[in-house]
Length: 416
Image 1: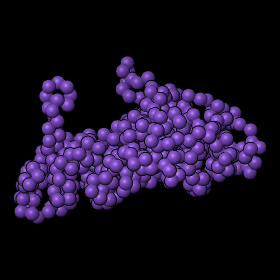
Image 2 (image 1 turned 180 degrees about the horizontal axis):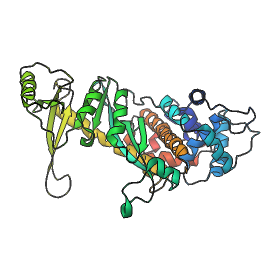
Image 3 (image 1 turned 90 degrees about the vertical axis):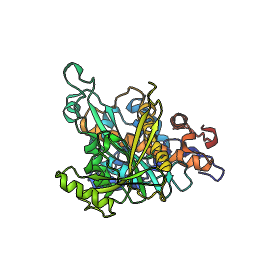
């Protein structure tokens, strides 16, 4: 980004991918997965296949050869393409993707997906905590025997979905919409199962927001053990005894492990909490509850009671209103999901890959492309002193596609 706040031509092109996904990250992933080039004169070495796979996720309306033709100019400018090579055929690209395998793009994504927001990024922080959200979504896949066996369908019989579906659960940075970590599984693998694999990646300077569907004792216990702050909506059936009412109207309560079944022991845990004595963390967690009403949220004339659970127990660290506002930022992940599925992928569009191993490869490439665009938007927003929400994702995506082989730049202030 130049001092004047204008993105250079290469930033708004396939150069977005090369800038955000460095060649050395790809080379390290290739080496780690043991899929290095077998021929020194091959025109599709692994690093080119990785960039090409990402480009396939950027140009969803074009076939393999069209995409390859579009990106060779940009890859050449960045030293990733030999001008003496010819554009590969569709079958050649497919074979090259098979050689690359499913794991390289996982390593590439995890090699680049670091936190994006800076201290100047609007909507990204609560006090000193970086705001994150966790959510899941489904991905429609080509209806092939391999994909059906690996991922399965939604429903069964006459109510079975038209296409096999993969399930993805991801951690996103609320302020920038950037996905920072993800897990991919079959449709029958539940969101809670995939989320459980993500919680250990949390850090103590992060605050994770989550909808009520993600709550369980095991999930809370695992996430809290990382030292990260938590702000989750409580499920309606969860019993929350009032331990102490706090000055801001929130109250302390206790989450008790369901394995503690004896009524006597449960009374002891509650009495200890009321006396200011913490129970063993294997048995209970002292948390704070914030309740507020959202009037007529569903448009049916009735209100909805929202109950939030937080590991931030001291109102001096974050008042009840601050926590309610922070939880509202969770909906930014819905925006990230929409960017990924509706804009980048295309509404109602299925993935390209007809083989399960290439489905995994494509999903991780897709997430990586979204991350690269999120970085571009965040940096443009900072240069123009804007909230990233004020920059149109659709406009950035159209500009990126349009200038893939061109030289046009743009000013961040012109992206709203």
